[in-house]
Image 1 (spheres, rainbow, N blue to C red):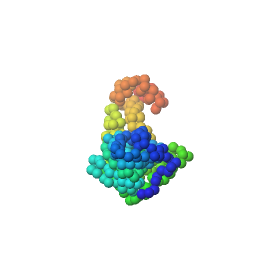
Image 2 (image 1 turned 90 degrees about the vertical axis):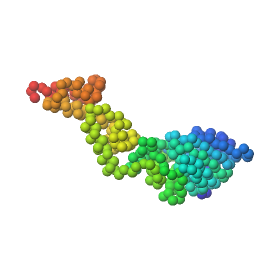
Image 3 (image 1 turned 180 degrees about the vertical axis):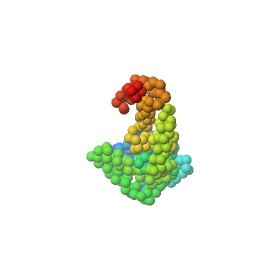
Image 4 (image 1 turned 135 degrees about the horizontal axis):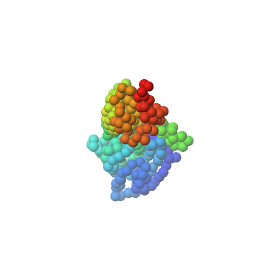
Length: 322
């Protein structure tokens, strides 16, 4: 695979000390260590661009080098071999990568990579948050531990034009005129493409099933309004991650989970205070029943929503004239 993705316009190092290049990679692309042969003086090169929340890095150490990383923590690495070959060792065993092949490294996956003398690769660093946000758009339930791709090794030519998309993304990265929102748009396209092409542990949920699950959660909340709900509890009840839960509430209620619960509690209190037949003895009692422990804050929130103090509602519907 002779085509390079980044041009000389992105060059940071040429004919440089590999350890100097390694320090730069540690700072911008991902924590790792390198081991060089005891003889020879390899000369490394590197092209780098920051693009949206990603880093694009085209790298050659100029000699046989072993690269080790314990884990990437909060990032994924998408790596494409351009020239030479690379030996990958990880939990799955070993793979021998040749030009035109792609590897995807999960955040918690320690790996050891051995590059040949003529090895050059493109590395795309993608934050966990980028993949997480794409789950909602692709109707995926994100597992609690996060998205994990099932296989490390893939053939780039058979991945539905992924190479063309990355080529375009790199070209746009070298065009400094693009505003941040356009860059974010390209990043989301790439993350969505990966989720649609590569096998992973995310569960595909049709929109109608997702809505049914969310409706069941809302019904449960309505039936247990005297209880306190945390975001974690609601996420477990809906069978989604906390990040996905926020997306569902934004989509179907245009508000956050905790704001929704608080609003429903206030509406229930208003219903009880305005019902002369309800067994409510005073405002403080019903407020405490629904978890409003600060009387002043409760009264202020109530007035903002209903235009009067809770005591006014209570007195009005319990007037002797009624």
